[in-house]
Picture: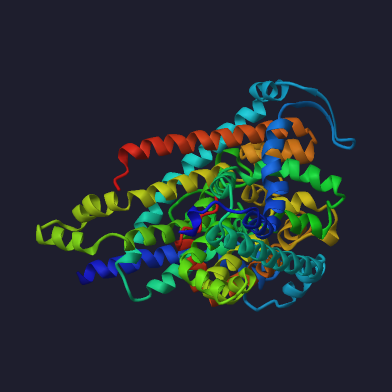
Length: 271
Length: 298
């Protein structure tokens, strides 16, 4: 039994090392000199920490602009999506209206369609609205997500209907009931949806790549991609830049680990 | 209850107001484009700047039917799916089963395995590009210890797809492990106790209890992994520096769509390839559902 346990730990540790190795290699390389990074055989750790790589990488491309864009786009998208989802989930969970089932099923079916397919018409629509290469293009299409509505609705439904009727008898309006009772009750579900969304928008690549065409509108992943294809960049600088892009979400995840994991575990499946 | 009462127009109006913001956005950016994609796939002569359609027809699909690049894209996508999904599902099931059996450090391991999920695919692809470097890369260095000659992972068309598959498995493992952990925690512990009393060993318990009991989750994980793999794009773009691999060896359907749409402005053909992608995903999902009806034990 003991040997078995030890074997399990050995296998899991090998796996964990494999998972962490790219992160380690990224950080280790980011502190090496250009010459050191190309040495064969490679060295595991830099001889001396080259902090200036980080400064040089940050200054080599407009990363400050990219960072501002990324923060703005992910925060606004996330709050907007939560807002539209809270209102819509309330209607689906507690209100009585005609066509509820049909509307819900149609929206559910749209989750089956690959988002990549929608890029072409959306690009055309946003071009006609003259929004390509603006924050509008980066934000507006993502202000609502049926995935968020679907998840939140389940959480709202767990609040008994009796409570809703009781609140109405006491004279509370729907609006009050939603924000004073339902939303506080679903706090952890809302946090989870918000976190998954912020991670999703932060890391999004294909749409920002297509919807922007100037440096000033790029988000971090698009900016990093452009930076990587510039000539004469060194791997230590590229690794430092990659670390900028990865770090914020890793920190967020390490602090709010519980919510992210709960979200995925509760069927947090994005089709 | 109240839900059986026929809603009044006031009820409907109120619900509409609550639904409206979501409906407007999803209507314009999800529902409309779904229909529009199908329509656009029949645009054979379309002017983007004037938004004028001059001709409609099947020509885009005919073009795809004959285009060698598109055949390659479909083939590479299938190779990618077959390369990634079985290994990813099997590995994540094994790791999840092991993780499920320990308490000490279980949270730590879970956090570590899940880390790639929150990581920007573009940024981590840069790192893998560096790891795959032929001369100074970490992977060739490690492989050197077991006597493997340096491989030019990213520039040799024979290895580019393998490199992509390894990255995708590494990235997707944690998510699937988590889903399997949920599946495992739903298995009734008494079944194991009963089997142990009956003298079943660890492997027999795994084969005869765990596997059948978690088969719905295995199904979910597999379908999800297949759909996700069909849509691979970001990792290709960033791993090969804005190219679909050396000699187009990692050109997939979504990459093809991107190229036709964004690089060549052939909207109709791009839309048609999107429709084909959708049909491929639909067919595979239906096949899996059909297969699981016969083999998944609930």
